[in-house]
Length: 270
Ligand code: MG
Image (cartoon, rainbow, N blue to C red; front, side):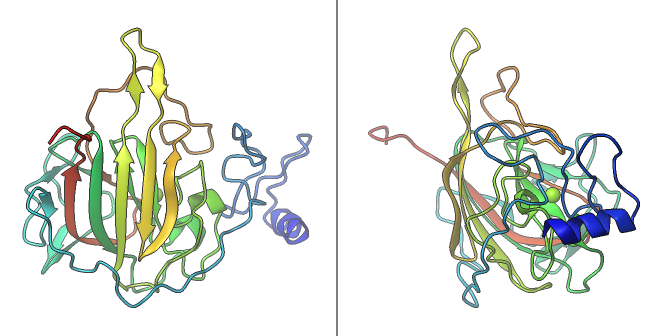
């Protein structure tokens, strides 16, 4: 892998002189990024092993109806629960789904959430266009700060911590359960928000559980910090107790449908 990586780097003339590292072909990975804490890998490390491929069943939770206490964020009919940072959501609304519009910006929920259970379905573009991070890239950004990657990871090599279902830039998924381009896929995401004490000290990191097409990708895995590209994530100042769900616009016409969310309760507090 290293050999072909070097050859490819030389081919594109991207060798960074004097550092001992080489910038990789765009999107395949990096060797000039900082080291991740408590892991042997660099951020977006091109040498990080990619997860094994699991072929999911034809359906898992496709079309799962929302339970009675859920907030339906998108039922395929309108974008009324969504906006951009500074205006209305301008993604394409089709019968039963919405589609990312290039340069229309990411969209976020008007409502904000703390700890939650989220169901959503997505489809990467049926027409394969681009490679690595440029193929079907979008993302579900939890709490407005922690990205679970959406990408066409069907026969599409990219860096392991950036493939579909990755805790972007932090942890690769336990498996590659991606479906083919254009096929509907499901995410069940359970998220616990970070906590700070009154003095502003972080007392609990955010964590996530992700099931992709019926396959577990992460189980109560802690985020290193707020999502970053080519940098080590960190928490910084205390966040507000709630945050939006953000769907990322990354220039590719990825589709979404059937999105609902439930806030998590507490034991013995009915
Ligand atoms: Mg993304």
